[in-house]
Image (cartoon, rainbow, N blue to C red; front, side, top):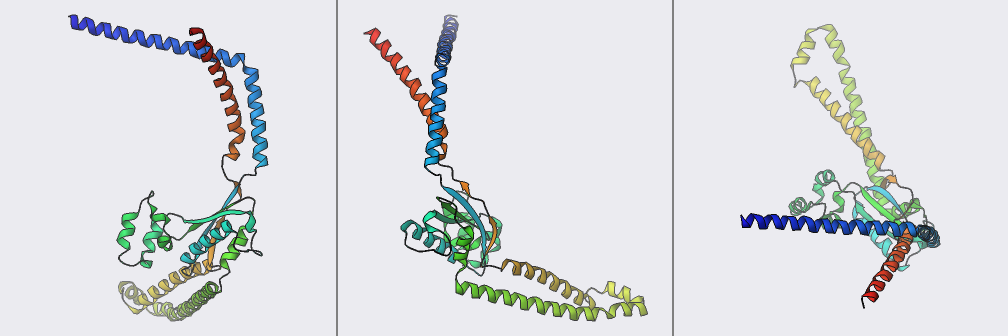
Length: 314
């Protein structure tokens, strides 16, 4: 029984302590709200002054702008693209190169490239890697892994994102023209384009030849309807083989036409974004400065109150 009484007393003391703390918290909240209401005009003035000051400073320091270009390299030019972007970024930072005729380099601050992460394209393009690298690719697949940052694996991706950061808008098409200005890659692209056109024409010729053969089938069926049953039952006969060959040629030509459409440039562009202001501390000054002024005012008065209380105690 004495032990139960002690537990009852401990619980009672606990609730009494919580009640005391809650009372102090409510008193503090009441005094704080009263302080805000008493100084509401000053606080509003500080907020308006801070917002105006922040807006003026944000306009005085022009925020950086950013834009993105989504490209798909052709004719095995991915490694060249990454190397060119790296060289371009270094030249911009060191003011080494002249890009007159393409874009205004003095406005650029940074340019970088990264693959658009897509495991399906990695699996599709595994044949571009040596056999001993393939196991390491599967082991390294992780959204947090540095695997995606290694240019060594860049050819495994179909799409790549070029990020441009500048002090003002520059010609994104000028940057693309600069990247396209490689005679070797252009000749390689034209050769690939011509090769695909030749294959399409050859396939069309073969399809026409097969069509001319198939034109005799209706007349054969018309002469004897038993030929139709024979045609349906014999899966491996010559007519079925001709139809299968034509189907494969049509499917192949459809694939080649898609490849031909993507070969209009070394770096096929699938998207160019608009220029937008890059989020930075300067763009948030309109909100930060009023908050800082209000906090300074509050802590100033809090410091005065603590100083007065300590002075009265002494």
